[in-house]
Every structure is written in C-alpha cells, then in structure tokens.
Length: 211
Image (cartoon, rainbow, N blue to C red; front, side):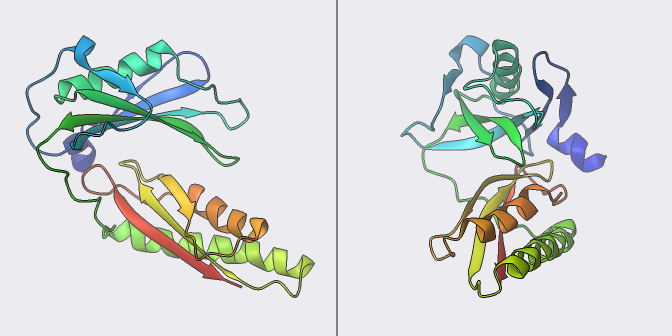
C-alpha cells in the first residue's frame, strides 16, 4: 500500500468499453502543475527531449474491439493526471493484441536533455514472475512441438513493465525465430503474467525461451 501511495495510483470508473483508468506518477515532488488546455495530445513523442512524469492505462475487455482512439472522457482523465505533474504533452499509445487491449497515456514534461532509458527490473517479484512466464512459454512450446516434432528455434521478447505489473511495448527481437507459433507462445506468456509493482514508472525485462 505504501508503494502504491508513493506512485499515486488511482482507479476511475469510466464509460464505454474501458473498465477503469489507473494512473501513477513519478516519485518525488511534482513540478508546477500545467493548465489542462496546454497539454497537447499526440500519437507519438515530440522531437524535443522529454521525461515521463505520469502514466495512465485504460483497459478494454478482450472480447470488445479496441477503437482507433479512446473517448474524450478517457483522454481528459489522463490529461488531468499529466497536467498535475507539469506535463506539456500526453502521448496516447494503443495496445491491441489477442491477449490484451488497452490505451496508455504517457504524460511527458519537456527537459533540456533526454533522460536515461527505464532501468532493468530488479524488484523481487519480477524475478519469480519472469520464471513463471518462462514456464508458461515452454509449456506452450511443448504443445507446438507435439504437432511439429522437427520444429526448432529460440525467441526473445523485450518488454517494459508498467507501474501496475503488466507488460507494455512487448516485441520479439530481430534475432528471434520468425515462426508465428513460437513467437505467440512467448508473447502470450509475457502478456498473461503479473510482474509485480516496480519502483518508479516502469522497468525493462527480457524473456528468452528455446525449443
């Protein structure tokens, strides 16, 4: 509970297909709040250096189609969190896979120099969760191997953990096998695993599995 309070996590009930919005903010004292109307909503980060000061996620039911954009209520809720942290931009990311559908709202504040990438995950829950995800992926691969005994290959998924333990920006690396079934086993394992609450606004992990 202390860590969640430090992250200022909150849940808001919203309309349409989004079940809730959860938001977290960067640790430490916030910058001076920005006016809501001054927060630009974009689909990609601006060219100027920025730092992440808030992150909101609106989950969609997997059985419902994800719209091209979230509705105004969702965007406004994300903008309020971002503006309170002094953000000048809210970047909307769309996550639409067979395992998870969501919109992410990244509150970005302009800075003089780009900050470092998110750190590697070191919180204790992540180590156990990564082992659980590897077991899920290997069990899936075992079933694929029964259907295709000669199948070989390895796959690596690089991904970020959001403040609530879910994976975002998950993608297979270029050196991974291009076999769709093998990739799906690894990606599904990543998206179906709770990786625990990291410090700050997220961290990075890699899942490696092989036949």
